[in-house]
Length: 297
Image (cartoon, rainbow, N blue to C red):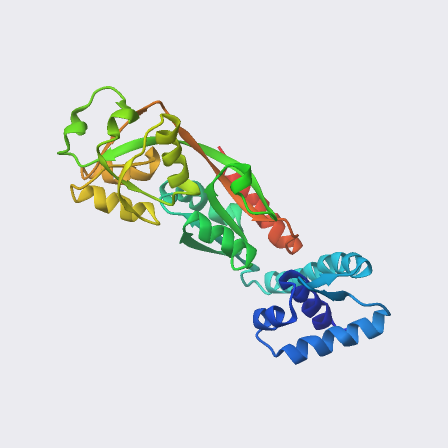
């Protein structure tokens, strides 16, 4: 039984397609089909059956590949161990992060990175909440930091651990009339203000939109951007306002290019670490647990 045969079969199971598995593995479909057939010949039963909806696992196939995934993870961990013994970085941990979260989490992480993730190279990718979920499913990242949405908005197959809560606040240009406000700004009175929004169905945008819908009003949307950095630049231009996590604008406030105001009713969002339900290689799972503990309040 060859290691690659199990890998190919696992890819077919994840893609529910021999064609999809071939694209995922960057090899020909005939090579995938041949190796899976050889594996089935050796173990003595079929792993997959074809249905009108595509490829499905047989009962024996489901049990076999569940164990195979654990074994493949352990074998991959051996490479990590070898690199560590050579003194090389033992692994790469790739995380996706929602726009604007760097000011919240990066100081916590990089202050003691060598202790938290010794010998690990960290890759941080900035992406929208939707793209983080997609990248997790496609296994392009190991974990993602995003706003915890309603349970029915979190795709199946993802788990999450809560990290911290962030207060939402209004950002305006320093010369905007609202910048002189001393009391929290009533969200209901923002109905005529041109507002810059983010994703409207998940993440920050969904949280902000709910502020207005809870009051029975519709926001006057000036623009929709897929990241907070763009939202802040639009507000800095003197056009429009936006509601973002307060901590995301601390640097701009320090430089005097934005003003941050509390809102009423107050609203906070929960930032969580998302990961796939499928097990990671053992060492990478340990690193992910260390990352989670370092980022938690």
